[in-house]
Image (cartoon, rainbow, N blue to C red):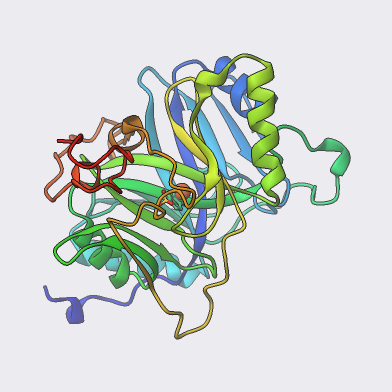
Length: 343
Ligand code: XXG
Ligand code: FE2
């Protein structure tokens, strides 16, 4: 079937939540709630539903207890119930497996269309959510990294142009890229009016690279780093803090007790104009991933979370099918090693 023969795509509003399978729920709670300061909407012995202080929907993150660490469904909010029907028809026409889950099957949400997408990721589309207590002005409650809301997914894919084509077809705009004359190494794409809802890192996939959570101020990024240092648990800081080239955001990447990566991210920019121009970074620009030219450590390029299939098994991973950004032999390579040191 050609693209023109496909049914209309669902109207996606934003990236909204993720699901992480964690091997020790109590330990995960200490990290995500006690340390980072996420708000608990609901919890029982098998799962914890978390949100940021600005979030008016039920959750931004579900931590689910399981035997093997993995990423479960990634959630996109769509505009209306009709868009759930569109999602079902669109992914059905693509030949993807999907389930229609009744309201409440994902706690706090209306009906969900759960799809195993063409890239191998589990995606939940939902249009309705419960609204827990508004906490935006409960400054007295804010702790840790003072997370405001979910911002973006970043996924590892073996073929970045293929992921770009698929998300273009879903109506995502392109904000920034890393490329050279031959290769698209990475791309940032949006539905909401920010730099991204979804980004692609070239690598073995499908795997989840990280979850990006928005904080209002660079101060929140620095403060959580100081708290982590004070507690002598600095192994949870993987990369940064710093200023990104791509997105211009201030950031730090942390790893949770199961190794799932998250980013605390703030102050990117508006992308809502219909003629929004794309910013294309050369893979040889040392400022592209850190505006101050700091090194990207190898684990950031190579490590990521396994993802679940629709039947709850770990998805098999395909090795990278293109030139890897981390192997580009330039002085401005991803590790900021002198030219010639990286093979
Ligand atoms: O959100 C992001 C990122 O995808 O995590 C990485 C914005 C920019 C970058 S990069 O490392 O390219 O500066
Ligand atoms: Fe990110």
